[in-house]
Length: 190
Image (tube, rainbow, N blue to C red; front, side, top):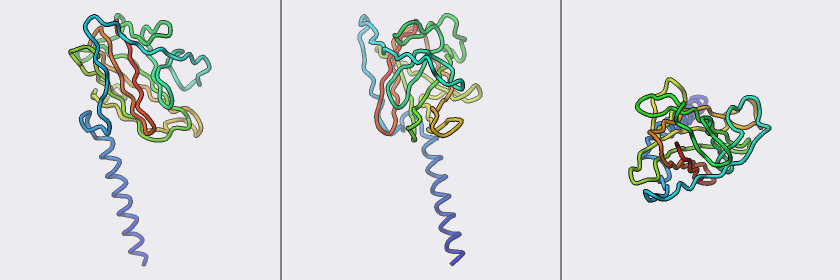
């Protein structure tokens, strides 16, 4: 009986680890949901997302005070964000791998637990992909995968510092997929 219990625990652990590896190693083409960002014409204005002000954020979260996207996950643009319209000023952002590497913090509400998939691209005809990396040592990819909770204590906001590689000036969309919904955030890089 004891060996049967040990064998069952081993099977559950192997299945659990295998599921985690599959989830975290998927490429952009293997995301559970299709990338569904709008296209805009060459002379159309960029339909930027309007943010929400967050003046009382906890000390362990950098970014803001403007955050973009609705529950459960939001993003802040830390380089040249002015006013309530989502945007980046590229002039002071360092160049790395042929693109501007902008610090990009993400938060999830304390009540959210589950996967977060983040992808993006230009909304113009070139459809150039945005690349993301979790930290300074990881290679950029088209799919940033996060998992909530990621907080210092239970019942606090999850927080992830990351980098987003922006190819140049333009209008870009970010698709944030969570268990309950898909959220689109559009920003302009100038």
